[in-house]
Amino acid sequence: MINSSGNYCIYSKVLTKQALPLAYGLIFIGGILLNGVAAWVFLHIPSKTSFIVYLKNIVVADLIMSLTFPFKIFADSEIGPWQLNTVVCRFSAVIFYLNMYMSITLFGLIGFDRCYKVVKPQFLTSAHTVRCSRIVCVAMWALHMLISLPNSILTNKTPTKDNSKCVDLKSTLGVQWHQASNYTCLAIFWIVFLLLIFFYSSIARKIYFSHRKFKKNSKLSRKKTNRNICTIMLVFIICFVPYHIGRIPYTLSQASSQNRCEEQKVLFYIKELTLLLSAANVCLDPIIYVFLCQPFKQRLYQKLHLKMRTSEELENSRSRKSNAICETVVIS
Image (cartoon, helix red, strand yellow):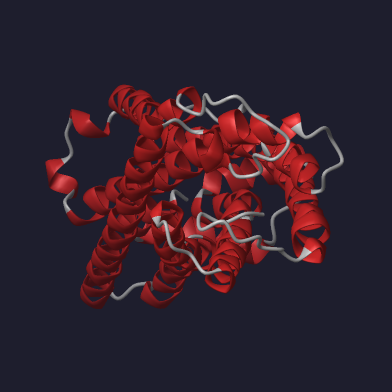
């Protein structure tokens, strides 16, 4: 691959053409199976709360995101024709990022929804109705399409077999929009991430003081709440933080006219490996649903003809009876 200064950079074929496509293949299989099951379960759960509406939209985003993986797999492994790389640059990569950031935004909305209902339940308004949450979701989808889709439209140069980099297929305006959308998406992630820390810290603090006041079953309920909060934050930290740290220097390197080959290779490897972690999020989200959404867990067990353990049923019953705040966080 030729860098911007004209030097020929050779990337590891074992990594780019074998290891990464294999890893994406496994994630694709897991993502389709797990999110397929999640979609099947959510079809049998009525959208009675904004929380359920947001989770259903995450399932849709993860399913669409998973469907883009085969294009990357075949293009990177060079199994398909060279024109497949153009399809990835113009369409599947754009759809991948659109749905990834939509999923991130939805988790931010869930964090706000949970925090507001726990910390300020006396101020609940129509902002938390199902109808309003659906409008918010439509607005967020429209916003992310506005950010992402011009990258597809402005990738309009005539492709050749030697144009192996997506940036080579972009017009001058396309390169500028690509950079602008990258920085916008980076800002979206870090804002959502910091807000999630604030939201869930506020929830944990509210429940801690509530349990200190009422005492009853506090240890059990607090443990369940902390588990859910830690699960969400751990997934975000593992899947998204490394990529959004590595993406900054990689985006800057694409715009630079002076890139040493070794530096370019290191940044490329970091970007690809951390992007793999972000892609793996489609397999972890369905696991979050089990911890975060009690109706999902109950319906899943019912559809699979499994019986919940007595301890779990007792825990859920106690949680419902003893603490309405915990019920709001866990949706039990």
